[in-house]
Length: 250
Image (cartoon, rainbow, N blue to C red; front, side):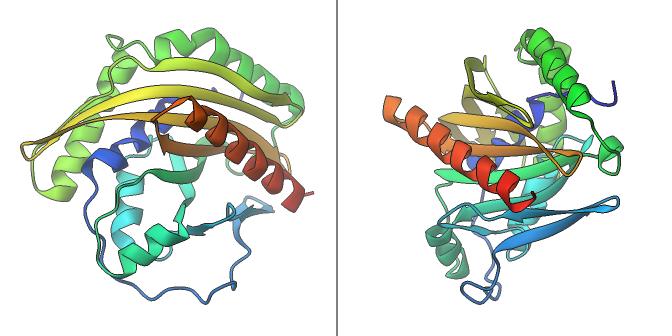
């Protein structure tokens, strides 16, 4: 098997929510100028369209890019991350965000240039299903090691001690299962202490494994959880976006 799929990346990026600061202003892109971001993966160019109502933010805000990369799993490369257009406008004004809703796309470094067959992707997804309990065990070595690595990175980035506790992530099942696409949903209650400021934030996270042009990318959506309606909302959003990615790369 060329790769093993894991949700630890999704958990890691949630620390953006609890430790984010105001971002510096940078020039905005011309409105409507970017339909999608082209990314080269070996001899393939993958187009990552922006979700409706969102903007690619790592290309506009260096602080957001640095925080996104700091909270990424070390085996992955970040390809893109998106914020609602309204949030991007707030960042241009120097405001602090609530991070109620954001996204990210990444790829495993070891296979970003390698073709992945439908059978290999299916095997990787099945391997994840079998081992997800170990991945999400709050007392297991994977989650503990991830917490330590993220704490060290954010402490260095923000110049103040940061502590992270992912609690016990809850699996909420699969909601999109078909060729070239598998989507999962979980709920994480994130606790953080950054320079003495404590926060507890429940977050929904979707993780989609998308096979486009013989490459597999990881597509994530994150939303603060308030009610059952949010579960339906994030699943519909993720489904629409992942389908647009597949369609853009046919």
